[in-house]
Image (cartoon, rainbow, N blue to C red; front, side):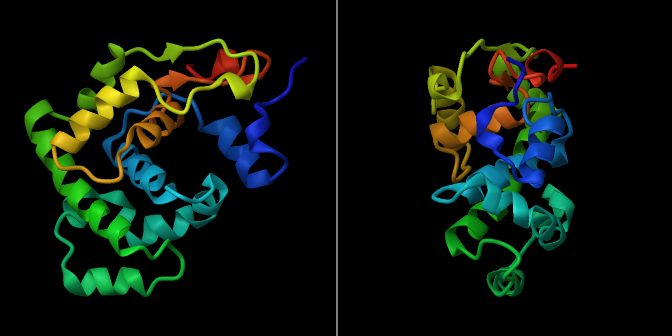
Length: 188
């Protein structure tokens, strides 16, 4: 049996995301900030909804440049709230701005967001060996720790479930099921 992880279904956008991104180790600070933002935006929604709005998010949030996003003021917030290309939730938008400020603090303290995050997995992806998607946890003790640390540093929309989804998406955790062709190749 050599099938993709079931969760990506038949949608071409979802399949492309699964085949090319999900579970691949990510080390670029802007992209890490992007994924943290998108995972937080997903709270209460389906991932495909966020994935379909991803390009709009990139345009609306200046390519996820944390230095730019951290300086957003009231007029930019109003502009974002009027943008139907993104999820127009005031709390999620405000947390993205606050999270950008927190990213800058982390970069100052650790040198990069990448260095801060990847130390949680000793700079090496955790490779799980799930037989099917039903075995995958929604959160773990490690995502609990990451969530608590991020919250302590002022981040919002970073609960343990969001953190675990982020860790999966950015390759900190390889949760492709064993029969998926990406199981062995995601970390390369």
